[in-house]
Length: 151
Image (cartoon, rainbow, N blue to C red; front, side, top):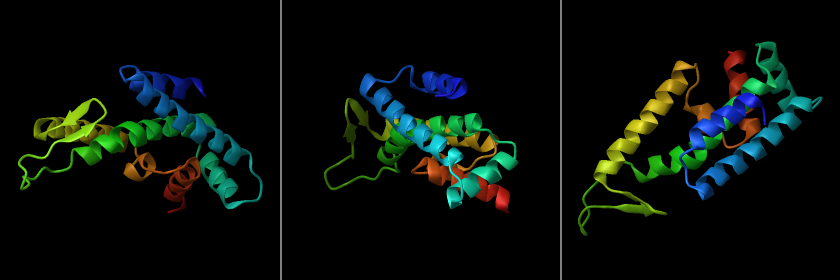
């Protein structure tokens, strides 16, 4: 874990319940380990992606921070976003989603969508779109990042 990624994870997960924080940390650890492997590869498509990214001035530390942000998005924001989709009345009345100790009614859904919008907006201001935040693996993240430089 690079110092910058460690600081990002600490800031994003400080107020989370332990099981959720642990899930974010486990996802990040897997992505970070995969990233180190991909940066060390020789003669493969992923090694080519790493070379493109490095050629654009990106270090493994910078990409590792993206892995930390991606892990938070995938474990925390993604599921909350799914639970807060536009609400509709059902035959049974108002729809409410329960996830762990969290309840998502219409009011909470609005707040959650606003939080996700702000995260994505700030992410975009850094020059990234949601495809980096939603990459399923470090290899996919590296490919999507390299793809930006191929254009």
